[in-house]
Length: 424
Image (cartoon, rainbow, N blue to C red):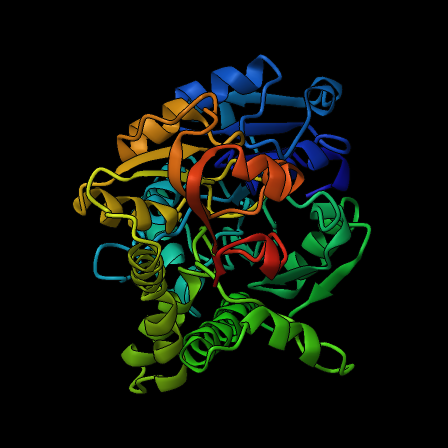
């Protein structure tokens, strides 16, 4: 395959796929493929609802096109699959998006093509699961007629500093020739450089470990939060004090949502159990973080009771719905669990989030979000997501929204301890 003849198809145009397609379009003809017609239509109008790319960047990507038609990408010779890999209701890997994408690409695969997966998976999934589907659908043989690559995504939604170009790209392939091709390909778009992993399984495992490590560190802080609450100690002040030592890692307690940290450990747990070992530390960390939504509710209800606010018909304002700050991503947000629990207690819960799409909130969670904020209206405010807009409001701005004896409960430590009534 001559370098000049590369034609790239990016399958899946979400937080990972779109920035990748835009970057490759600077060098090669690139087609973005997605089964979501609404998503493709908005991209054709130079609009990105994920906010990972700008209108100007989309307009400048003149070598980039978008389609929902599989036939339109049949002429590509490099396919990069970036579909989501969630878990099901039992926290088992949900591989149907990966299966569907592999089936689709297998149906149009040709001799000499390269298929690269960027989706987060358990070790062995690319070669043992995806390759089998590609071979069955195409009738071609791996490493004889086509080859595989794996390059785990490292996108941090909403982060304008650690972007695709500034994060070292891990790359692996099923043979040496493909290794060389992919190293050259990714090196053209990644300013931080490319790290060639010794095998696809190592690359797959490294991605799962990256997010599992964060999950475990946050679980430690969440457990400290529970411990120190019983001792009457402010956890965030402890972390601030401990951070004066050069090698302390200043993670903070809170809800663990999103598509990565709260999901990827289950892929590692699944594969480990399948291999005969039941991981204890990772599983315990997951259990701690899964329990934090209920813990927040319990703390919040206790604070209301101590403040003589009856939860039934209480007016509660929750600020923030997305899974993280300054980002519109609603995937796997744990705030919804708090909303559901408070609603069960017959509280009147309002949700306000300037970053979240109101239509998606209604579609995903059947939530009617507030579009404006009323003053002197609430018995309590629960600060759930540290959007910049909420931080800028400060104590004075927030108190204006409360009744005379209203309280502020700060999950994220957005404000100083003396500015709120309680914080996690």
